[in-house]
Picture (cartoon, helix red, strand yellow):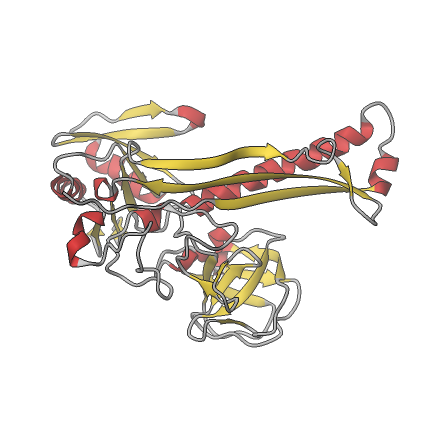
Length: 359
């Protein structure tokens, strides 16, 4: 029997803090300037955790979302987070201070093409699904153009961002929406190309596809069971052991089953909590994730979903210590790095269902 080889390329993630000489001088005293660094490092650690959390829910690209409507002002409507069609709310992926750039979805170029730096997000308006930029974009955008992380995309030889080039790029780890896919639907350009080196769209590699069920409609217990049954059939009886969904779907499921089946609450590692669904041969914890796309349920088998790490998260201590002077500046800095990527060795042990509603 002949087997295909799969590759999980490592991605680099970095973080940096800087403290100005004035801040150090103002905080002089026993441990004062160290305390200034402690506050900065705590803040960046929290921001980094949120960033990785949202990357894990994506598709391994630099795409944060799509422009909702044409625009030439600082206020920009956003939708389709990570380029996932109708996966609202769009604003969820943006944070104040984030640097973003515009990308022509049809022309494969920055907007404008000469752009070398991004725009800072100054505020977010959840009620209207909008972000406000600190400066007016240098060129107008069209509905459906992408907003990408500045300098965090994957690039080809012409410096164009690529959707799923695992071997290139410098910062966006693979996410479960791309891992749990059947490679049959094109998202945001051309990311149905081979995944981890194997073309799941090929008729000879249909085993390299997760189960995907779309347009599910109003949530019922029967539909959840149908999702699970199809995954079991697709993977020779190996069932998922965790589901991720939204608050609304989780609450609807509790309402559906509480009258005739006991709901158990599980306390998981890291402070997470989940309810447990029991049906057929499956006893499945269902957990809410704040970045879960609206109407989506991800069925995961944690046995086959892993974070492959070449270098764990560490503060750089090369050149004599973690805190270093910035050359030519009245500043000190510290930075950390991590080399790793999320991957799977058995894609068909998982699945996702989209388009669920609660009424």
